[in-house]
Structures are given as structure tokens and as C-alpha cells.
Length: 400
Image (cartoon, rainbow, N blue to C red; front, side):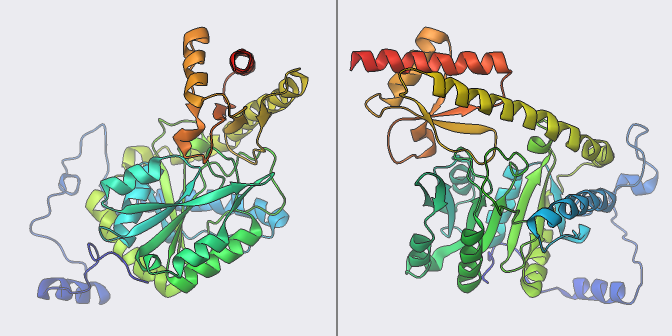
């Protein structure tokens, strides 16, 4: 696999070679220009201790996270036959967010002008970060036929084309936002084989994985995938329902030699940024301990609202609004008659109900007539929002 030429030179100067040789012999070298004040008795009382610049994040915090992830995998393995259970802390990278993880990984695998594939419909974050990294993004379609599926045949043709030579990674969001669709088992098998064949890395964004709604059987995480070079992203933002809890992580897996080379280069990127604070690391046990309760709390809310949504739509006499099956996540897509312009619908919500929303074209839906709706509001607020949408749809249809 070709990695970015921007990072990871294998050439060492004479001093670096001598330092490496000393380390290999177990010799601890002191540095005459050591500018880490915590190693010289100058740490403040508020932040005591000696700072160790570990590019992957403090080892103790990664070990705590690895134990948490391993325990989670053990729980899932019995039901889902997950072959990857134990998580190695040395294959984890701690950073401030999954958005930062995307940025690092685009640097890792792409030179300017290379291509990353992202799902459409989908959240526009990938395209935005790609632009910041001078990386081109190309959409692959999720198609709907009673449920969402990936057009793997189209991807196979694309990767075999001349343009395919520039494709360095594919982003798989599992489950996707706003479609709520997980990567199906047969899709996973084909995609892993394609990525291995064409030397394409998988970036698996699994921040919504734990929030299943109406899933199909057999969905499982891409984290730990061994068939192709895989970078799985997750973090506290969704696990704790706390966007202000800025802790994310990358789990690296795949064929051994590829993982080794990827981590050697990723270490350089991580060492340049060193984003993870020891102050946050100290709270890792507390934060990890809160995950289970928060997952239960959010699941109860979104599943309660989803059930109520089904009831409201079933009881609606007009029957002009339907719900696309949502397998997982926090959001669902409502479908309304395409004779109503999406902009008109949202503008009417603003004018009549002091509500706003994100229409389907925000996510590059291929046709008119969709509105994304969050399942997170308190039930009374959620029902009020849905009834406002139904009222606007009914009113606009009367005017057609």
C-alpha cells in the first residue's frame, strides 16, 4: 500500500542512528537540551507529575481504554461471533475527536490530489476535512430499496478504473448518518476483499454503533478487522452523549506488516500534534465507568421516541409522511410528497412554528422530499416537532 509522501521518511541521520542503536542496547540517553520543565522540578502544583510525550496518548489511559473495549467485545462476541476480541493498547491512538482522527488519517494515506471515498447520503464533514487537507473526496451511493445498501458493484468498477488508482481510502460509517444504515455482513466481506485487492485503507466511523434502533441480524463493528488495513474511530462524544467530552480514539488493525508501517508513520503525525492532555487522561476511568449508564439512558430516549413516531404516523389520517427504516443512530429520515419543495417545508416550519431543520439535500439525497429528524428531544418536545411537520405537509399539499 502507498502511504502519503508527506510523512514517514525512512532515512535517519547519523545522530538518529546512534540514538536508535543505544536504545536497542538498553542504554538510556539524557538530553542536554531537554526542555520538558516537568523533568526539572518545575511542574505546577495544579498539574503535578512528569509529562511523558507519548504520541499515542498516555499508556495508562490506553490500557484502561483497551480493557474497556475488550470487555465490550467479549460481551458482543457471543451474540455476533466477532473474531476480534482482545484490544491491544499499542494499537490505540487517543486524540481530541473523530474529526481530528479524519484529518490525521487523510495526512497518513493521501498526498494532495488523492481521493477518499465517502457515503452519500451522508454528513458533509468528510468533504469539508478533505478540502482542508487538499484531498479530493468522491461519493459512493447508498441506495434505498426498503432498506439502505451500498452499491458494491459500482465501487468495484470504480476501483478497477483509471481513476481508481488515486483512491487511497474509503470511509464506512457504521451506522451511517442520517440514513441509520449499518454495513451489512455481505457488504463487509466484499468491501474488505476489494480494499485488500486495491490497496485501499478502510476508515470506519463507528461512533453511533451502540445505538441500534431497528437493525438487521448480523451487523458488527469493523473495529479489529484483519482482512484489510482498518482505522476504526470512536469516542466519548456519542458514547456519553457529551459533544463537549473531547476524547476520541483510533484503533488500528489489519495485516501485520501494513499495520506496522501505518503505525510508524501515524506516530510521526501524532508526535507532531500531541493533542491528548494528562488532565483528561486522569479522568478516563471515571468517564469509561459512565458509558454503560449513559448508553442505557440515550437508548431509552431514542427508542421511546421512535416508537411514538411510528404511532403518530400510523394514526395520521392523511398518511402523506412516512419513515425510512432506521437501523441505528440518533436521527431518522422522514419522507414526504416530492411536490413539496424541501426549502418551502423548512421555511414554513420557521415561519409558523419557530422550528428549523435539515432537508434531504443537505445530505446529498438524490431526490426531493426528505427531512432529517432527531430522536433525542424530550418526548413532549419530540411529538410537538413531528406534529408541526405533519401540519406543514398537510397545509402545503392543500395549496398544490
